[in-house]
Each structure stands twice: as C-alpha cells, then as structure tokens.
Length: 234
Image: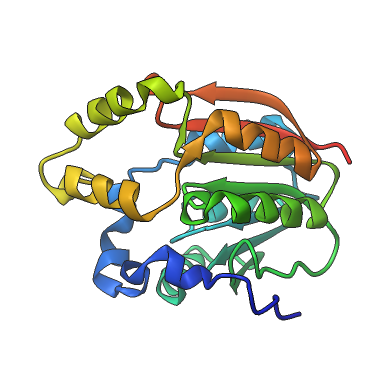
C-alpha cells in the first residue's frame, strides 16, 4: 500500500551518499560496528531458530547477517539500493538462505507473513524528524507481535537542554581527523545541521505512545548515544 502523498521521501532524508558505491564500500570500516555483543543480547532476549527478525535501516547487513544462522527469518530493510546490493552479495557469499531484503524505510516497509518477534534498528531513526519517528514507532508496533522486542540505538542526547552546547562540543572535539578512522568533525557537524537527532527525554514518551514499555535504557558516557530494549505491551 502506498503511503499518503504528505509522507516524506525517506531516501531523500537519508542523503545521496547512501547511493554512492564508493561510500558504501567504506561504510563498514567507518561505522566500526561489531555485531557480536548485540547478537548476544538478542539471543539472551529469546532470539532462536523459530524467530523472525526485522532489521530496519540494515545498511550493509552487519547485524542481519550475523543473526541469520540463529533465527528462522531475517528481513533486512533499507532505503538504499547500494547498501542492499552489498548486503545481498555478503549473504550469497555466506550461503545464507533465510535473509530477505526490502528496499523500504520506516514509513513504507510492509511486513508480510507472521508478525516479527524482534525488530532491530541502529543509527537509522535519526534520518527522520520527531513527528515521523513517532509514526515510525507506531508502524513498528503494527508488525511486531504482542510481547515482541524492539532494540534501538541512535543519537539520543541524554542531557538537559542547558548542557547541549557543552555536550556537543565535547563530542565534536573527539572526532577523528580523517574519515579513514570514522566520521570527522565536519561530517558530524553536517549531521547536526541536516539530520534529526533528538533528546532521550523526548524519544521515550514516543515509545510509550506507540505501545512500548522500556525494559532497559543505556546512555553513553558522552550523553550522545542511547540504546533501548523495549517490549510491545499493547
């Protein structure tokens, strides 16, 4: 089903770099995401060979591919055709037959089959302004089974408004000098200007409104990142 005409274009929000093969080729190294710990958390929460996992904003598939041997079905969702092409190539190389890909976003993904048992999202929701984050969470609740688990990590500022400038400047000061080692200060400044990080104290009520109960919240020492384990309760 097509979304209403007043919905935003998620690919445009994600930025043109996500269609750049050269950017995609360096993405894993820059992101520096080792899915081992996250996979361990998901398995401790009940991920098993009967479970369906939906990875929203899957990128090149670090978590989706790591989880595939431990569950029945994985759906890797991303707005970028280039990211999904890299993901499918890796899945083929690893001979994973239970990984599906869907070129969609939070606002357009249409789940089929049994409701998902787990939904995972890492550093993708910040592409959406707060209005659309809330709607995205409502949509997630719509295809996650009652009692199912949402794991989400993103740039959520866990500081009072009066401390934002100090927290952000400390974060920018620690950025690497070149993009070879991660996102530079200039790239992080672009994120702040053009993308849509939010405060933890705004995001948490969105979760409640969408029907989730936060079972665990972890805030980084930098107060820039937060991650949540949530259960759909209604």
